[in-house]
Picture 1 (cartoon, helix red, strand yellow):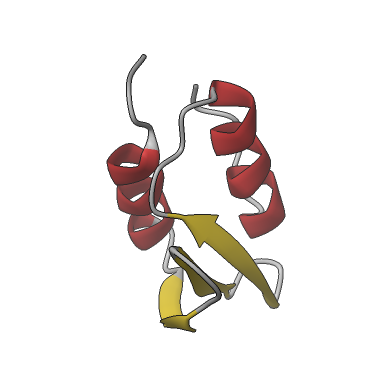
Picture 2 (cartoon, helix red, strand yellow):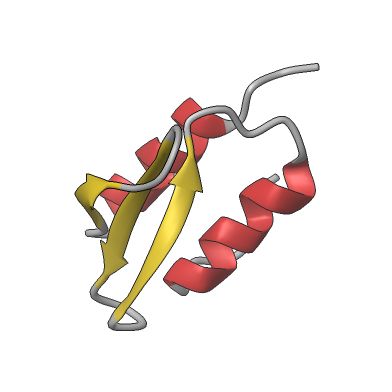
Length: 64
C-alpha cells in the first residue's frame, strides 16, 4: 500500500491551504481559504478514499 499523505499535502498547498497547528497524535490541522474551514490531515494516509475526503473538505476535486 502506498502513502497518500505527501501527495495530499502537495495538492493542498497548490490550492492555497496552509497548516495551522499540530493536532492530536500525528494529525495536523489545516485551513482552506476555498471553504474557509479547518480540517485534520493525518501524517499517514493509506486509503485513497480518505485522501479524497480530505480534499473534499478543502474544496478541491478528487485526485486519487
